[in-house]
Amino acid sequence: MRSAILLGLLQGPTEMAPVSSSAHTALLERALGQRSRDPAFAKSFEVALHGGTVAAIALQMGAPLRRSIGRACAQAGQRAASKRLLLLLLSALPPAIAGYLFERPIERRLGGARPIAAGLTLGALAMVLADRREGQRGVEQAGPADGFALGLAQAIALMPGVSRRGATLSAARMRGFARQDADELSWLAAIPVILGACALKGARLHGAEVSQEERIALAAGASASFVSTLASARLAARLKLGRAPLAPFSLYRLLLALWTLALARDHQARKPSQSILEDRPSQKRESRHGSASRSRGSKLRLEDVSARTR
Image (cartoon, rainbow, N blue to C red; front, side, top):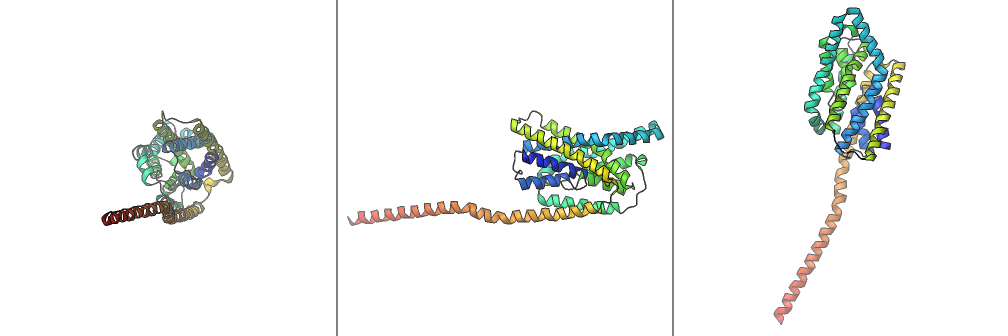
């Protein structure tokens, strides 16, 4: 229960900021000793966390995004509405295809400390480079090509450590959007993708057996995720983080990547000593068995000598 609440509370701020919620969740799970838990329950818990997140994002961001879309459509008519729907479709299609085909291989092969550190580092560099560009475009100027760029960014963000938020902000800034407009586009592309990810993972878990204790943990994690995401979203809006430069977040990501690698090295360094300690009892057993067999051999030889003398 305590671990579920802590992971849920962490989900909100790390989902709102471009710092990779998956990297933070993996590190906290390792610190709490949760990395060896049942894979089926781990997947269910991930769905619960994202469910709480998307509910809070929809509650906080839904109205402003609807107003933005309505304003853009009112200015340019039916053609603009179709254009915006196409943008949403193209921003959701690449991550949907990539998630359906490659989600499980990515989780198996890229869930370790080194791939996470690599994702954090590459994402930080992309954010710094993208944010150096002077953007002047507004949300109302976004078209299908921009939607496809956001979709590719979200597909790349399936790699742990990259951050969906950071990838979409970088893509929008590279496409020439101002910071505030890039922030709005990032959320516009996020909601359908997070909803789709929850639906896909939930469908794969359909019919799985869940104990009463696990149900309580899922509810606690989802509730904590909802509360922390809603609070983080309102704080971000008050501080106007959508207009903030990406360099401080990039620096934080680089420091987190170094810490992740340091933890991995420390864990690797402990393994030989642990294996030696684990092998000692077996070595003692082997030495006992060896001495016992030697004593039995000596006894047989003495009996053979005495038989010959008789």
